[in-house]
Image 1 (tube, rainbow, N blue to C red):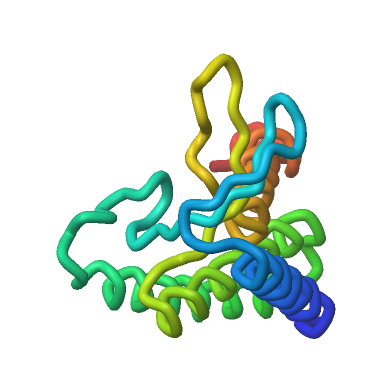
Image 2 (cartoon, one colour):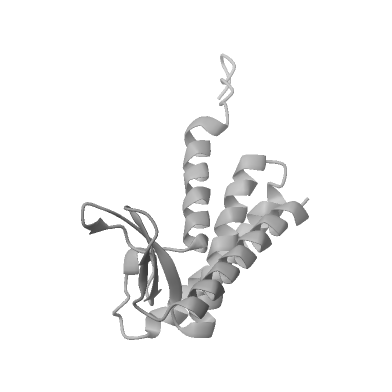
Length: 161
């Protein structure tokens, strides 16, 4: 069944967009509010990809990354349909799909992705991120886990190849 996996992706998109709307309603670009000794809420924009890759590329990257997100999302929906009975695999893909679509909405509507979660330690800051980025990261981690530990390989019987 495809519906449960698409529902998870939709939940991620909604959670991502709601949290970004709350931040943009209460912060102006560059604002920062300490929450703990290692975490701030901030409002920053990313015109690039992960870790601001190609952020200063002149604008073409907006539509390039939007196209990549659309192609990847189409492929993910295909794999969700084809492998709908593989629960962890589909959970991972659903999280990635929701994150990709959440950031795609920002990229198309705003020309940048809204980031607001800022973790830091001893003056070193991890690049700010958002709910969509978190979902993509967790989904990718599940895929890595699955690739190493998820499926047992059945031995080939003697004399067979």
